Amino acid sequence: MKHLKLANDNDDKNFPLRRKESIPEPEVQQDGTLEYEVKKIVDHRIRRRRKEYGVRWKGYDAENDTWERASKLTNAQRAIENYEHSLNNLQLNRTRVCGS
Image 1 (cartoon, rainbow, N blue to C red):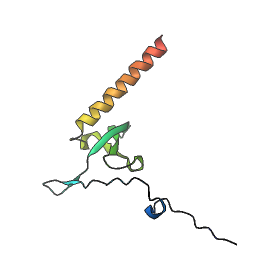
Image 2 (tube, rainbow, N blue to C red):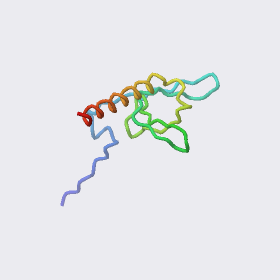
Image 3 (tube, rainbow, N blue to C red):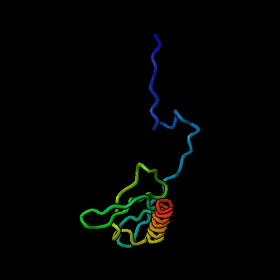
Image 4 (cartoon, helix red, strand yellow):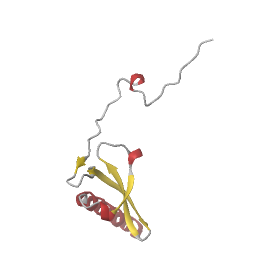
């Protein structure tokens, strides 16, 4: 009888051709806090009467997305604007399709 070992998909020895992305180090701010770079905004919601955005972080996968208050994303205005613009375009396209 032969025993099989299950491959752990987190073990790079089992997947030598897997593309490795280096995870960028966060910037250390003057006050000692760490600042990560936003890759893009992927969603939004209202929680406790505050707007939150689903954030995809640069160098990280979707499983590392987090919900962040809009007020905490002061250096991510371009990503927020891009998300809001694409959301507005999607709503406009839905109106055209439904209104036709």
